[in-house]
Length: 205
Picture 1 (cartoon, rainbow, N blue to C red):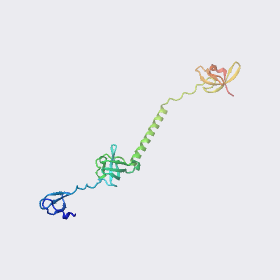
Picture 2 (picture 1 turned 180 degrees about the vertical axis):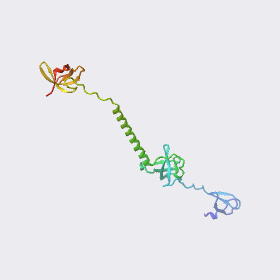
Picture 3 (picture 1 turned 135 degrees about the vertical axis):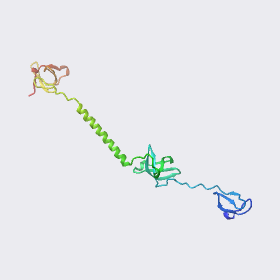
Picture 4 (picture 1 turned 120 degrees about the vertical axis):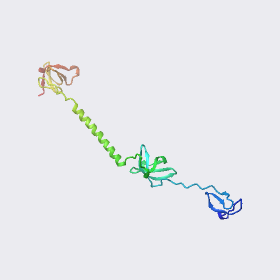
């Protein structure tokens, strides 16, 4: 039945076709309201439609992004400007603002600025470590020269040492202040090490 043919159940007068409010017809003669249906739900309106330029709060900063999906009312899927899709995420109304309304918000850096900042930080760390290493080298005490005996041999030298009339190959382990030397005979254990006078030592030919 068309709305124009409906009549008031109170006075049988024709009802007006206009709904006021939605879902209610009012009799123009007696003023009785007739509710004929529940008002339809308002259409879902996304405040940030797909493609909207927005800012999204992540951490302590607001970052530039674009809306790429609206999966549900008050839920938006965003992609951060300059970042790959692996950073896409769903955000609620408490984390998203139109970019035109971002004045006064603490904004995050651009991706290129982030990369430059990281590179400069790494360079600064490398320079600091190099400076510390160079300072340590400069402050290291000079290495004392190897002690040298009166015969001209120094610690670590390979020489021959006389023992009971026979010359044996040995290594100078230490040169004493008085010129004597502690030697280690090649092929023998440490228990045979001994301190000898320079006259028992000769350099290899």
